[in-house]
Image 1: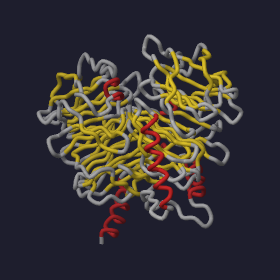
Image 2: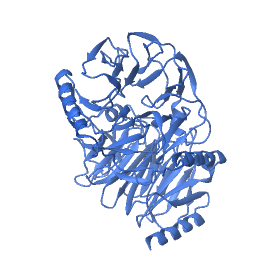
Image 3: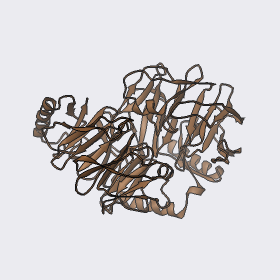
Image 4: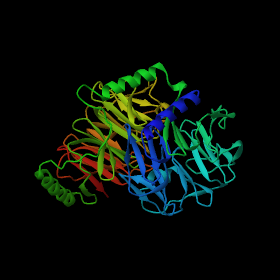
Length: 558
């Protein structure tokens, strides 16, 4: 009966939403809240469990229970049912913070996190605090001097609703200082408001009616007027990201809606290509992603891993290493904003949840990167560039890339098979929905690997020489010059906080010392001793992820 009811409800939605085309979203029983940002989608059910969307299935992320979850450029944050405690998702787990308790949080702004307390006081967490928080110490929230029960931020500013359901807007909230001059009341009434990264605004009033704000642009950041999006059943929650409107009804049904504006022929063609690639002859597409287990592997591997762990513990000095969550034949890894992705020898991308890896697609990739710009990857077939959108990797048109990096300040950088370095502007990267051609800017530098962070971008060329630039603009991709840095490296990885690690052609690992705002390129290299040659590394929020040439994955902390 539920399937029949859902089908009839879908028909109802299609009949009444006019420009919006809706269908039942990936099935999540008794959905209560949903949030989407940077192409990724999370949801909470009536039991308070947080789920992450992979393909058409939801992966449970924790046994903790939460009131609200938000994902965006600031990472993944949530507030607990018990005590309204604030959590950040770090290295596969939700980590509790100390400091203020929040009833609701939003990570969709320009790197800052905003939230409201149970007493309806609005607060802001500066972007540098949000990005660097590793799970220790107290979060320093700034009071926004505004009574709000819900708050959400996007491209053109922040919106909120107060206890009387009045709507407020400010375009002056600074992500770096959390300073703001004033809030303006906007006509209308709303119980909640959600802002997309592109600035789109949707509200749900106390009757469960949905409205979209029209006329929003840089000249009119608060828009002009409201337009009702007709639904014949009351709504509880909405979220919007990259052309997808996610709707949760009061009955717990999750809907996914797209606007006819985004349903171009090119988008449909792209979707068809993806479906064909995801289900090659003789294989099924990912319907039920499951954690990767290896209980049938030879026991000798476990013994070898244990001995290798002891070896690592003996030689890494300041770094304490242990075998990471088991991923058989790991080949490449990347970490950003607390999230971790990895590729195995078959080219399958996996996402870390808890201590298990979940395969994200049947497509095969050379390289994957996750960060403020979202989740991007390059395919083994043709080096095509993909972006992860609403549970699936969506192929782009334009240049092909051998390697990409999403860890900078919103831009995406990459290198072609001919070792030419390019940059995708932050506005192009954040707004790309899967249609149209990506417009890459040539960086006029021969590089085989490139990575960006807080203080600039690093790269290695075909002769293993190391280069650095601190002047790559995320908004224009303009850069003045690259400086050669002493040393030799086959690859270089930069953490969001500016930490730099390189691996040379012999598989030796080095860390760059002395990096700061005054000395952006650092001062010297220090070897990080490993008793096995290293193939790839990534660093994020205090965790150093190491892949050995034998395919073993290590997790190290300082």
